[in-house]
Length: 193
Image 1 (cartoon, one colour):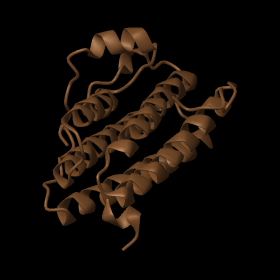
Image 2 (cartoon, one colour):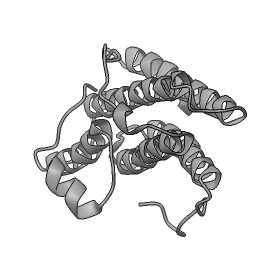
Image 3 (cartoon, helix red, strand yellow):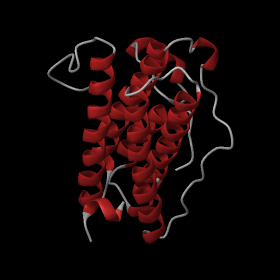
């Protein structure tokens, strides 16, 4: 079985979420914050475990569900024109594939995959143009990159770490493409943080 096929935790809120957002200057989703906070908690608890792997995978699954919903909002906004709409739908498909694999992996590890929320809160009032939608999507992709980057080292099962790194690469490509379409430098620095 490949590491991708082996590959989800309910949303957790960091106690210092506001401080983290303020200090970092990043717009991260609640799930990205949870993954990053989970990394600190797991590091403090010592060695990783299969149970912690399931928690991290469930958090990643929650982030994928959030991305799927966000791309749906963008697609249904009527603001995305072809071929940008096609790219957004393709990226949403990638997130659906990630969610499917994560869900299956959690079940194989004996865990219970989280479900998508019935409703997500997105800044729809501020989405007035195609570029607004693209900037919103880019901010979510950047948050996903940071979250997966924080999650990779916490996996007890190194095959899961490899799989998460593979998803991280896909999220980074999404972010780069969205930045390019917005007329920004696709890869703004030599390192992802």
